[in-house]
Length: 160
Image (cartoon, rainbow, N blue to C red):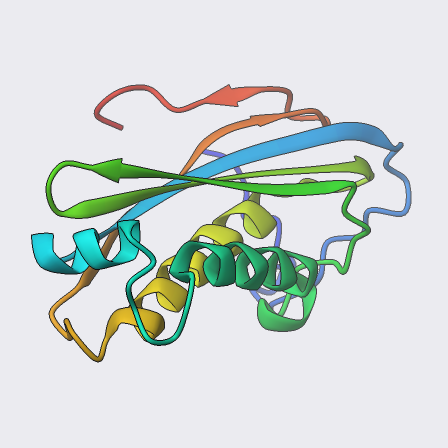
C-alpha cells in the first residue's frame, strides 16, 4: 500500500516538500454534475434566471477557486496555473455535467485545483438557481485523469 505523503513518521500532518522535484507539464481533468428539476434546467438553458447567465458566473467562480486552492485546502501548495477551462453539458432532462481541465508547469500536480473548480462551479450553479429549486443535488465529483509528474499518468476506469 502506498504511503500517505501528507503524514510524517509520527502520523502528524505535514506539507510535502517539493523542492527537489523538477518542473514538468501537468494536467488534471475532473468531472461532476448537479441534478435539478427539469424546469430549472430549462431556465438555465434559456438564461432565464433573474441573477443572470448561470454558467458564465459558474465558469468564472470555478477559475477563481482553482487559483486559490492552496488557500482552501490546508496542505496544498499554492501554484501558478497555466490554464483553467470549464465545460458544461446538459444531461437530459435534469442535470448539468461539469468538466474542469487545469494545467501547470511545476513540481506538483493540479488534481486538487481541478476538483475544486468542479465543486465551486456546482456550488455556484446551486446558489444562482436555489430560488427556484432548493432540491438540487451535487454529485459524482471525481478525478477523471492526470498527466505529468513522478507518478505519471492516471486514467479513471469505468466503475472505479
